[in-house]
Image (cartoon, rainbow, N blue to C red):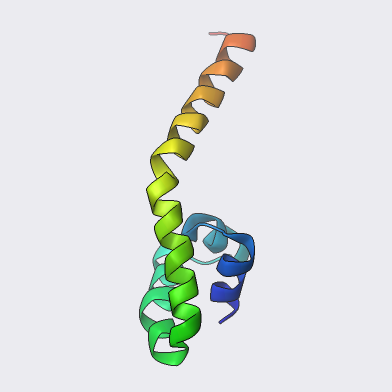
Length: 80
């Protein structure tokens, strides 16, 4: 329940939730997709909506992270 509430309140990804709670991504995913569905279906639907949105935006976040990586390298090149 805590994981699900955190995801809904913060629109958090599975990866960020796992890091905050100190558990694996697979545990977070199993808890909020399988176990939560049986315990609190209404909350499960809210979590599913956030996770579906995160999934649809995943490629955008990945592109932004790559851009930031190369911008940092441009300004601070690695010395051999």
